[in-house]
Image 1: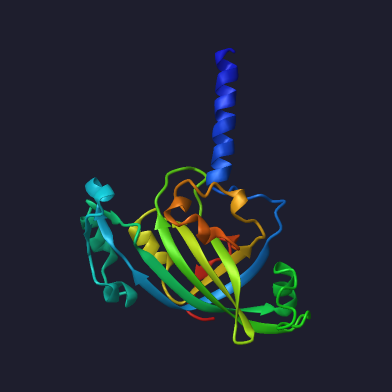
Image 2: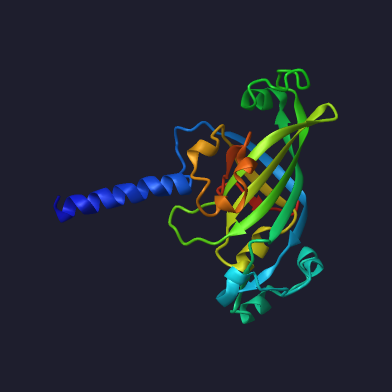
Amino acid sequence: MNNNVKTILKYKNENIHSQKVYLIDNAHTKKYEINVHFDDIKKSFVFSNKNDVSKYDNSILATNNDFNNDKFNIKNINNYKNLRLHDYSRIFLNGKSIVSSKLINEITSNNYSTILPNDKNEFSLDVCIGVATFESNHPHANHTGWYNFIENNNTVSLSGTLFYNVVSFPDLIEYFKKPLNLSLLLTKMEKRHLSIQSYPWNRFAKTFYENKYIFLINKNKSKYKNEY
């Protein structure tokens, strides 16, 4: 086998691996778009020493109240070059989306047809998303989430976890300001479409991915606004 063939096979294998680790958007995959308005955002950050992350030697840069009230001067963070976000850091988003019963029944294959009539009547869907941060310089690394619908008190809500690839901490703080509008692209893809034994997915137990499906963020339509 000559070197050119070896090189081609290497890139082919790397591309296949990338598609399994980081979901590469497929235009042929059906997506269901919902627009969510989050007016309740809580941040819980833990920081680690960059040179000793494996030992989970944690330190706090500022209290969570400082971040939640947007009182911390983001520019000061750049003075702490030796710190990075720890895997324990989380952001909690609570909001609502105005959706049609027909859309939810289509996504869930009419699992909730007894609760939600199969028509175009709109209702307010509660949406709760926990954000887990990670860092990757891989060109295919993106913001990918897992969701499911939950039935409670004769209604349906959406619960999910978003794995958010952090470019920089100031950018993270700036993005997750309230109020925040996100356009979520829900799919019916599940765990077999991703290599959940690879980072960042392996931070959660395999059982976490049972009965959950993948969603993406439509970056072209997602942004924070001052009004709903």
